Image (cartoon, rainbow, N blue to C red; front, top):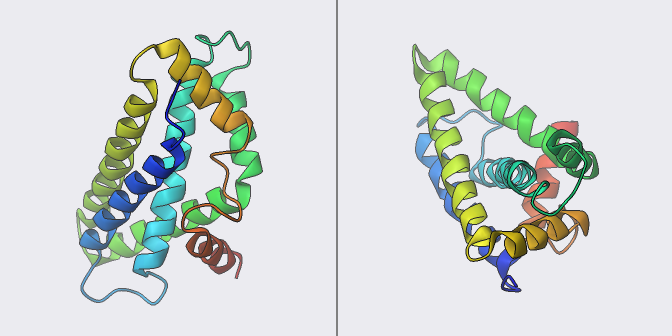
Length: 169
């Protein structure tokens, strides 16, 4: 059985990721880029990474016949507004970095990818420690029940909602 504080530990990992993104910002940030948006976009991207890894690692372990793509697609559909906002924001940040000079876009992409993957892997490893079957069942249940969905009560919900509203402008 997994600890009941896993979603809280996941939020802590998301906050660690949020600290990594401001370090890659240019001294003269464009008007759309803010530390709060960086943190929200990172939070969403990392949630997507975790759900994707759980699907790849766990569906067959728990006897689910659906494909990982279907499982992740269901989560993305429930969180579409936020996933789209994160994608749009990160794309704009990468475009802005590309405008600063050769290699800037790739450097930013590498740092963002590393932060999302490193923290996401740590979260998945923590979830799957011990008996993989139990960890997988717990992880899949978290996704199925919407515990990893973005909704009121989610850590940083106000920032996530603000990012979604910005992306819809």
